[in-house]
Length: 301
Image 1 (cartoon, rainbow, N blue to C red):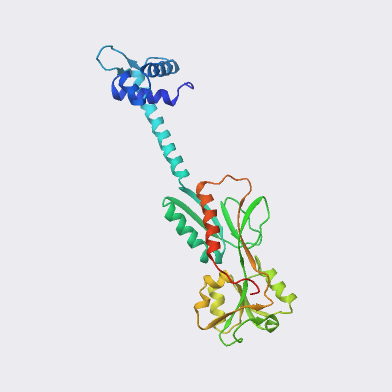
Image 2: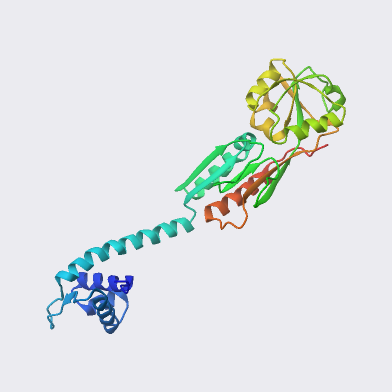
């Protein structure tokens, strides 16, 4: 049975439907002798005749063995057709993509990426997970956004520099840039000491600014609420400020810092050597396009 080929089954199905070898050959675009050879090969493989051939104008008829072979053959042909359709849809960008992300990317970059992917490929299956561990891993993810390079056998694309800015109540500091030394001892709300936060706070300390951290949370909206309530100011990257809508709040002011801490760097990662699906490749392209369309203020400007 290992000698049965799909083309043999396709020829058999065409003959059964057309009633003759000649009409089946014309439908398939073969010569009649080629179709006869394919059926002969099929009969050798299954060990018996699959058609009775009465000759003359009478149509050929399936033998009992032929009925068994054709029933199962049609199931195989249908599965192959379904596979071909699935492959075509995969190549056209359908399928599943799993993306790991972080809060500010989820708020600012990913909505545009998801919208464009779904506009281009309505049948795609997008799965997102938002975590910000100290030591992120790609695992089974296709793509991972992170604020910095991650360890392991991965490739990356730097999307943008994300400068740190000061968020304060409207009357806390004069308009314009704020010298870092004014933050020394000042009450501040901040992110937990994960991701790029420790490096940013160490940079503040090297510049002589050791604020008094009075509250930590990973939720940007909660930080802005606490600043608004007067608990303290916050040093946040531009993406987080934009995602939380802080700049449009007339009770808050966003200040540049002098000197400005080094910006947070946003990267997109994937496993090295992995062959991307068309959907993943397009997601990388769109993420780069979206990041290029953003206009964060230059660090130190």
